[in-house]
Image (cartoon, rainbow, N blue to C red; front, side, top):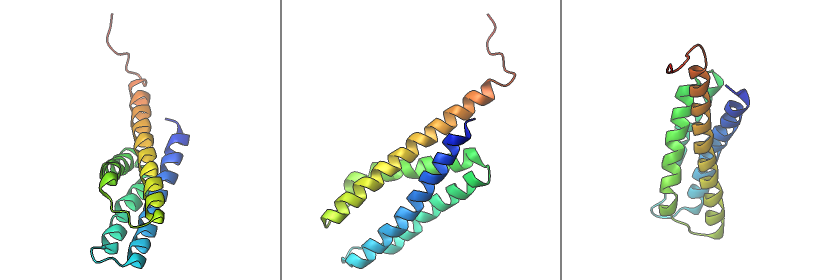
Length: 126
């Protein structure tokens, strides 16, 4: 399996974790009545866990966690409340990053599957 794809996924997943923490600070500073900065801060935990799993060579587990939570972020993006131009720009960039993590997760899983299938498994006989 290409280690470059895994390293890229580590960096992107760590960026999502940091992005959630930055988002929590922004939500806290805006101080709207329905704001929940704790929820954003807590949502950084799965991305930190995924990053640590990937760093510790638990590639499949880390990839699945990163992929599932980035899918959740991407699907939820249209429903996020935007109070300012900063919100719109930051949330759009964050959603794009989540989609990049999702694509990298799929790439890692496909590459790993192909590598396993190519090791001594001749496939169907003709």
